[in-house]
Length: 148
Image (cartoon, rainbow, N blue to C red; front, side, top):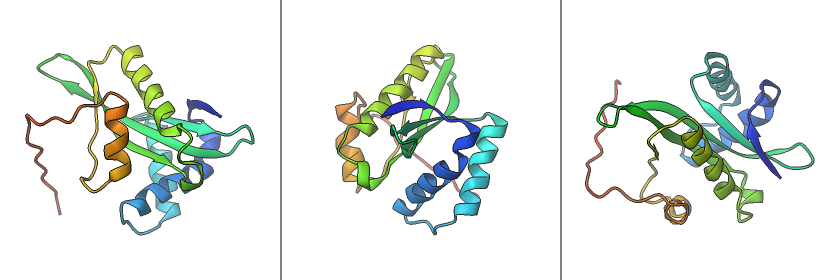
């Protein structure tokens, strides 16, 4: 298996994975909207997406990051927003490889770091992230405002 940057020819397979990711977070399946959303990200170049591809050219996982900036550190900061591995391929270290590729992006872009958010009930993620060097930030409150 290889970890690589997304190509425009991957859009069909990536859309299926992305839809599976959304369904995992209890959203309605919607492949067409997933495909449009991802095509917009690729065309606008406003996210970085890395995929895990089998030697049979099947995409089995992806990570998507968005650029942000830290004013206090005066540097770029990355948001690891999406990480998903096809359930049939879990337990093979794919998530760790995708996170390692995301860390390389942080280093290569001279960013100060990367952060992520996951649900408290996401046992898989909450076990995975500390193993890959992420630390739970207990010193900050996370607030959200939604434009409904």
